[in-house]
Amino acid sequence: MNREEIMAIIPHRDDMLLIDEAQVKDGKAYGKYTFKGTEWFFNGHFPKNPVVPGVILCEIIAQTASVLMAGSTEQAAMTPYFTGLDNVRFRKKVLPGDVFETECVIVKSKGPFYFASGKGYTNHELCVSADFSFALQK
Image (cartoon, rainbow, N blue to C red; front, side):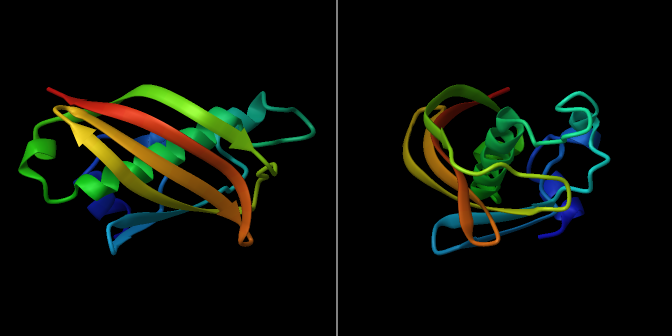
């Protein structure tokens, strides 16, 4: 999927759409984003030593997981909202110019709640892993 196809699935736009490409294969979602260095958060995190904030990496993983809802009639009229982040581990910093690749899977769902696990990599090296949950709401 390209950005236009992703925008048909998730509500994020402009500076908060943080996936350039995505695909779903064998029940997992895979995403990719290239950090250009011009993103808004690099101005303050950190001047003269820009590093992608951890919360942004978690957001990219969550957006990738939302792609798993593609084609769901339930999701079409709903917005995914974070309800929890657990077991987050940062292992390697992500810098301007890096291609950040994600892999996510929904491990459980109950009602409007979905529980997922995700990982993010640069150059095939694990940068971040997290378990998280989100709810679909109108």
